[in-house]
Length: 101
Image (cartoon, rainbow, N blue to C red; front, side, top):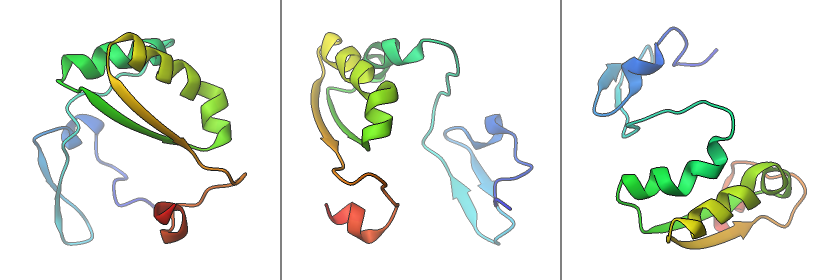
């Protein structure tokens, strides 16, 4: 069960602070959530609107094939400086080994 279960997404958006059942108070810097078809093609434009100029992309091969290449193109098209890293292993875990790569 997630510590975020029962929280409405709008209650977690920036600059909100919200209590958690773990006993701590958390905050989020997320300012906007967009869920719509074809949004990957607008990623660069959206990040540019928020003042981004440099982006570091991380993905595994599956994520790159599904959306990474289109997002990369969108970022370049928006004039952003982009560095991309695709993890070489087939399955990537969120662990210290992957972070260390």
